[in-house]
Image (tube, rainbow, N blue to C red; front, side, top):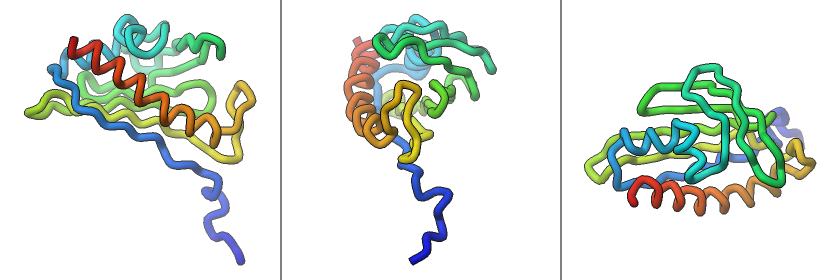
Length: 144
């Protein structure tokens, strides 16, 4: 039995989390697209909202992960590479209920191990759960 999709056979689905934050889009953007904002709910960093800016996320025991700003469309979209494999995208949309925030964590591949030697499939499951708590912190940061 041949697999016609062999090059994509090891790709794993993106992690996608969507939350509606009871806060104006400008406040949410401030929280997700500034160094202080990101540090308050995610992790310490040297982020700057500049296209092509190279920065680090300080992942505690996993060390400093190199990142680079790939897309920047204030106040609607920010995308950056995270470590050697992943892309994180924040999408913001103004709604009657507040700001619809979509987080996409892509770049997962079953055949790949992270920079710290763990299989993507294992880390993906952990991160899929981890983002729930992280987004809860974001919610508290912008709604508080």
